[in-house]
Length: 360
Image (cartoon, rainbow, N blue to C red; front, side, top):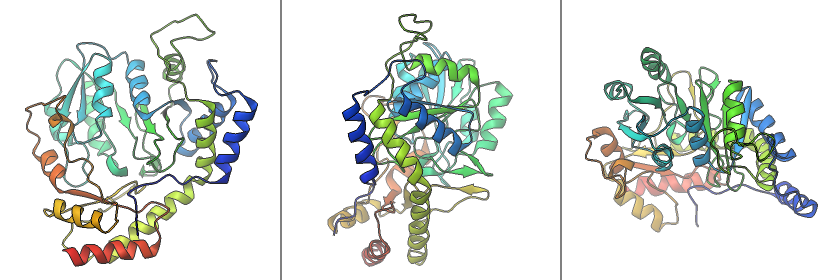
């Protein structure tokens, strides 16, 4: 039995729409508004998260880059981010010429620590990028208070939190812009892709130019931009996946609830939703001091448990910062994520739970 940590859930509808586009031959569009499938996807996703605008791009990393460019982040600026995230968050900042400043996390849900955030604000701080890790919603109320106090814009890294809400409002829609990923392992996929949501028309118009070399009508580059366009095939896959997303999320929640019930008597620290929070259960993440032993033995049984992330960004060979982030370092050596995606059955969940209890 093999149970991967995450796997894309695609079917005949996605295959059919890809075949149709290949036969038609309109694989992409360099127009300002994008191709017809890009526009259809943007409409569906903005409706889902209840944002005025959505701008599709070719990856979650591109979404972060475009949002930073839209804020005119440049060399000499500082952007506050957690170190406990995928390296794309930091790389996106660095690609603008700005400096990523690493902030510690809270052990409760592995997201940015507002107290440490405030300590690291300087006159050069030009943006804050909280990450909704594993689908857990960052402490947005406290972060918002700090940002308003210092008049600093916020970009939400919502790459892992599509479908997560706080007080009934979707992640990515609380501040200036929210960035999402459609990598194959996410809660829904485009093959590769990403998008930015915003309620600000000025940002939306800039993002449309940024994803297309700064152009509006063609060969009239008005601002700096790159080729960050989402191909029509990927947009069509994403549009089909958006229709399936509510059921994907329901299945993840059902699997998470069953796994929590079965692991209640274990000595693992189990994930829990905060008051007013609804997570998308992108990753069901536990903590244990026996992480490495448990990970190795579960993998040997074919259970695709994984550690996200065993090396925080500030400790990677490229960044190698000597900053002290105690909660981040603790999480890196204790977290373990377990499979609960839509292809995981209740029997799989029972097998995972029994295996964990036996090992422990």
